[in-house]
Image (cartoon, rainbow, N blue to C red; front, side):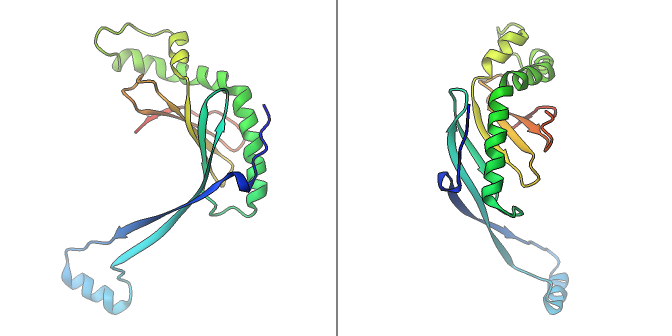
Length: 172
């Protein structure tokens, strides 16, 4: 599988993130105002680029934050290479997930009348990658739909910048 994404394939998303600083000590607030250290509201704009791709017959959204990226086109070319790596190693990634999380599923997350799963059963349930988030340090996270293995939580697999598969996590 070959990927040839360019910046034109991505949509720039901007979201205002509002944060408020709350203090209950009025004397402290007044001192900070006099020192110029008090900011009542601090709104930031979170920018992400995103697009949807088909990876191993699954529609997947990919994201990256353009902050701390020197050359976006070069970064996207690196994403293309990582997407090829993911498509070639998807079964290995799923096996890694099942080896790390199967015992947790069988010991703590079985639904009523549900039998223990085998590694094969577990892997079959990992049908879809919901999204992939690429980081400026060249690491990335693959977020799988859990098919209710863990009651609808996401299974996140961090991949290091040298393509080492880290331990998966149940999130969300």
